[in-house]
Image 1 (cartoon, each protein chain N blue to C red):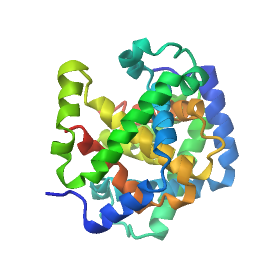
Image 2 (cartoon, rainbow over the protein chains, first blue to last red):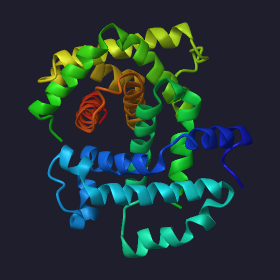
Image 3 (cartoon, helix red, strand yellow):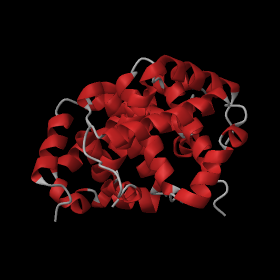
Length: 140
Length: 142
């Protein structure tokens, strides 16, 4: 079962092929920690998160953001079986990391903002509408 | 959650840069909301919601004007938005979840059109501001 039509998959993959996954990951995670500072609770070992500048230039934030977004890319490659693709990560986030699923929604929204920021006028409403739909099922 | 003086300055500066485009961005944010969160369309059965609709443009301008007023009275949102608060509570009764959808789409619209202004700190301030406005508009619901 897929929740995206063939056209929607085309739009998402088309946009994603232009994304610098490593950079966008770091920026999205950084902005999550800046805009919703309570999310920092999961990253106490990351060092200096004392200001927006500190967060955005933090090497651990960038590295982890890259890791997170590469997982998203993997998800996109397996878009017809997100549950299967994310099974192990789902267990990790639930049983070990104890992350409230609300945080995935927040990250999804921030990621959409970052993509809009990067793509500007190219990020039309049709492309944008795929953001929440695609990203929220990530918290399977 | 409280708007710091830095937040207020960020919001005023950003909104100042938007200037006369506010109406256009209001309409775009509405269009994005209807596209990304189709349940929001249920509040507009009487509207033509197609791309470029005159009704959406007019309504976008209305929303933008209200936000401009909110920015100008950022130190006293409950008073400045009191009439709108009554309207939303007693007449429109838009479910509170929808304010989050529109706020998100406003952020996306601003990110698209003003990448230079949309730094992480300004992004945070705007998100807090829209959240504060939403809180005032739903404050009399019950």
